[in-house]
Length: 116
Length: 111
Image 1 (cartoon, chains in turn yellow, blue):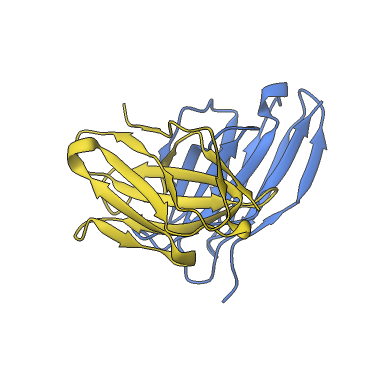
Image 2: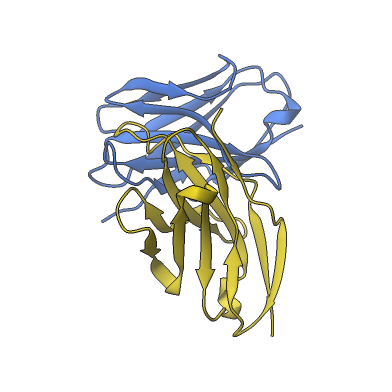
């Protein structure tokens, strides 16, 4: 069965430091891959997505993610974290196919805390 | 362009009752998906509606049902509420086959 794993439940980084959030997926073929961010009490905002093509994907707010098929990973990175980046981050995947992008499987989420 | 909206924002029900949650799609979107997010968990896919028909369902019992209307708005209905149904319910809309965008959610508390 398809699954998404975010190994780090909670991460704390200092403001200005670099960030990497890990995501591993389990699926036979290459799925669609997404990263969303959720602020407390809010819905999910799309940061970036990977459907095919270039394995390094640029998103909003200075985030990027790299798809690595050999490692079944889609890790999210940011070179310099800002205090406003503190939030919950979710990695999601959906099976390839035009009707499937709305059937996301999410990981458990990673809570990012930013120290001043 | 109007984003995805959901109503109500918060709701308190008692066990055994029924509840209806509503979602208005983003302008131009024809597909709606519903998710349940329990506290401290990632969202779980409930079902998707496309052209007023259910188009895929997650591991949720039949007491979770939905509707999609001609204007692409949608309802989620939950019968015989259980304590474990307490969660944030998220609606997301998309143009069929493209990225989906989420609403702010409805917080349901079952007592």
